[in-house]
Image (cartoon, rainbow, N blue to C red; front, side, top):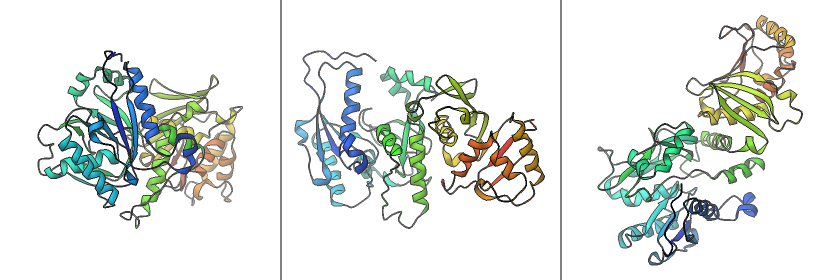
Length: 425
């Protein structure tokens, strides 16, 4: 989009209120505060729209009680945080009072909130009208999700029309989500009050609302942090006392971590290319086709039509990781995945192993695909050249949202005598 701003206009002054710090592992590269990433993305946006003067940025550590003078800024940005808007920590209450002060006493100052910031804005400004920030009864929302946009917003910002090529529909964008709270609208109307407008939302999440489209939005998780954390096998887990008795919450956090990194550019960073052609996902590296997948998040099924990962001269990602990345890119989440099907296994040794496995189909199945359990057929199947990468994928697929690969059923499906279906339960 090109929208050159006339010369002579003063630079916009943006104050970024930091409500959390980055994990120690990434601070040497990205800095201590999230504001460094906000500035990076805001500046990139300013360059894209051709601002004559770049905005002036200031950062404030509100956890330490540092705040700007609202009279000296044009906008404030409130970052995400591990805290909840309904927490009663002194700094949260002080920030809530500051938001109310800016809104009521400085009406020309724009307020922009992401994640925690968005929820706290909703609580402060919409709370008097009956809105409540609470734990989402539908559970945690993780990964990339489609967000439907108000057609009027798209009309006012024509550049959003370009997002249709991402497969999000006529009016929509795809954002990375990682939250367990939402802003419940006033009951019983379920509507925003007065001149507030809903600029977008999902079917069971909070509408993204504001008195104008710049008032409050939910930005995606920064992929730089996720990719760095994934590479270094680190993830930040902070348990609120509200969830401390729920061990399933820990599984959800790890699931969120895997799902979020899955839609980053890890495939491309490792030299892979994933393309969607004729309802099939194709993964290649160095010009060589390695995988062909059919994926249907609605039914929770993956079909592997091609798995030549063993023949990759320099493998950089296992089949399991590649499959997860593509699955999430296709719009699914790990908790939706029910079965992985290997279609038309064109390898005689594998065919023989499948035939042998069929002979013991009614016997107890070894858990987690351990190679040698003493059952005829299973050992041969797990050791076959074709099954090598599939077996590795399954062997590591433990404890994801409580799922373990506990059985494999060899059966004829989709009209093929050589299909291999793995049920994840």
